[in-house]
Image (tube, rainbow, N blue to C red):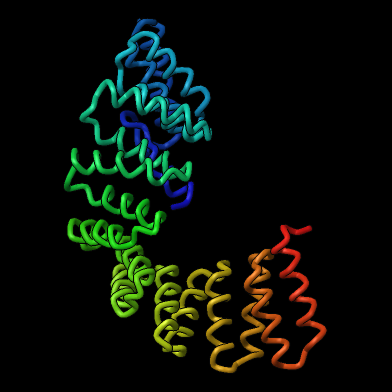
Amino acid sequence: MTRGKARAYFLPKEGLGESGKAESREALAAYSQAIRLRPDYAEAYNNRGNVLSNLGQYEEAVADYDRAIYLKADLADAYINRGNAKAALYLYQEAIDDLGRAIQLRAEDAFAFLNRGLLMVDCGRHEDAIPDFDEAVHLQPDDYKIYFLRGGAKAELDRYQEALADYSEAIRLNPEFSEAYNSRGLAQVALGQYEAAIADYTQAVRLQPEYAAAYNNRGVAQAKLGRVSAAVGDYDEAIRLQPESAEPFYNRGNAKERRGDFEEAIADYDQAILRRSDDLDAYKNRAVTKAVLGRTAEARADFEAALKIAAGGR
């Protein structure tokens, strides 16, 4: 899971949600006035911190949460919200510590477990994330998002059969959740279940017709089954929907090379390298394809570029 995707769940537990900046600034003024009138009002500091987080002013938000906690040391929401703000500042261990304190104060708070699990994922600590997701599932057994996120952590640990079960439960709870079909498809591919993966990717694009990644992933599964033309069609659609992505160009180059369309394969590898200049495999495959066409000097240059990338650019 990407950092951005994980942090999309790090939102203030209380506060303004998606209010516009003008409304947020009005709320900021109101909370500031409340604090002037009552300087010991911990909840006002907490809520002003939420508004500041909503405005992207995370350092100022942390200062307000600090004050709220100083005034009311058992205010669990302030620990959760300060943890979220620190996560946005990449202060992951401090954020984990804050969420741990919130859990000590309010052990039934699924939100705190969920956010701490997401922080663990952001830090690459997938094994540590799973117990937090387990507890969140225990507290909110009907929340499809938690199963989906736990499935992602398990997939990162190559526990694909368990990930499959979590994605399936997410789908059972929300049959319109296209991302869960795509992720379950990835787990199916890892398990060699290509037909089942294709069915999942097909459902993902039915629910979300502009889901470029699902088209690309379906192409990969089609190619695994030797359906090269079908794979190329899926890569075509992925490229149409997301022309800035290197991956479908690389995959389409592989498929075209496989069916003997060498010049077209080289053109696709060109596009992949243009978008991802350190793509070792694209250089290697382009080198092989050029060698097949007798373009020996160009092939040698690509092999040398691949070796340089493999050596870390030295």
